[in-house]
Image (cartoon, one colour):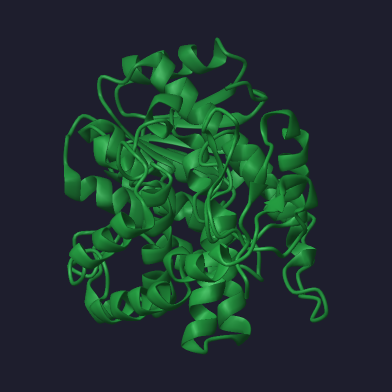
Length: 398
C-alpha cells in the first residue's frame, strides 16, 4: 500500500540493538524516528512533541507497553499504536486492544515487511478517516438525516476498495426493513444505520490475502488481525463528537450471545441491542455473498444458518424476530407476487424498485440479489455494464 511516510514515529524498546533495528528499518523508508528505552523516557518525550505513531515493546524496565499505549491513546488519540512482544499471550493481545487501543499487535521476531505494511496501513486509514471526519459538521442537520455525513460515507468504500463491495449498504438496508418491522426508529436507529454503513472500515488495514478469504477460512494469525478490526473502526469513528454511539455499536458487532466473540467477550444481555441487530444482519449478508463461507448461500440456506446459530452466535429473540420478518417480507415471500406480472426490461429499471429475482450478467455473474432495493448509484453501475446485462427482470409488487 502506498502512503506518505513523512510521519514522526516513536519507538520504545529496552534492548538497544532492537531499538536500533527498528529505527534503521523505519528511517530507511522515509519515516522520522525517535527512540526511547523506557516508559518514563517515552512519556517525557511524547509530552514534548507527540507523535503520529508509537511502536512499543511489551516488557519495559519501568512498566509495560500496554499501559504506555493506553496513556498515548488518552493524550494523543489520533496516533497509530502498535505493540510488539516476544510473548505469545492471548490475554496480552486482548489487553492491547481493550486498554491500549492498539491498531496492531506483532510478535517477535517481527518481519520488516509486516511492520512497514502494518504501519503504512494504520497511517493511511487514520489519515483518510481523520480527513473525512474533519469535513463532517459537529452538529447534525435535522433535515438531511445522514446526508451531511457524505464525506465519511464516501471515504469508506475508497478505503476498502474492492473488498466486500456494497456490503455496508446492503446491511443498512436489511436493518432498515427489520427495524421498521420491529417498530424501531428515531435517533437510535440513525446511529445503527450509520454503524451498518461503516462497520467494516477497520478491515481496510488487513493484508489483501486476509481480506480475500471467507471468515471461516482464516488461519490463526490472520484471524488475530481480523479480530482487531471492530476496535480499530470504533476508535477512528469515536474521534468525532457525533459518532460516539455508532462507534460503540461498531466496536461490539462481533460479540456473540455465548460470550465467545470479540473484542471484549461480552455475552447475552451484556451486548447492547443495536450491536446484536447489526451482528445478525452483517453475518446474514456475508453468508448470502460468500464472505462468511467459501460459497454464496441461498436465502433459505442463510436463514438456516441463522437458525442454527440461535443462542450461540445470535440472541434467540433477535433470531426469532428476524426469521419471522424474512418469511413475511423476504424474496421467498415476494416471488409469488411478482410471478403474476411480466418482467421489466433492464433499461426500464427505476430507483426504488425491489428485485423479485437475482439480476445477473449474460454470463451468470450476480450483480444484484433478489430483495435488493435499487438506488440511483446502483442503477448507474448497472447501466454502465449494460452490454453485459440484457433481457428482463421481475420486480416485487409492493
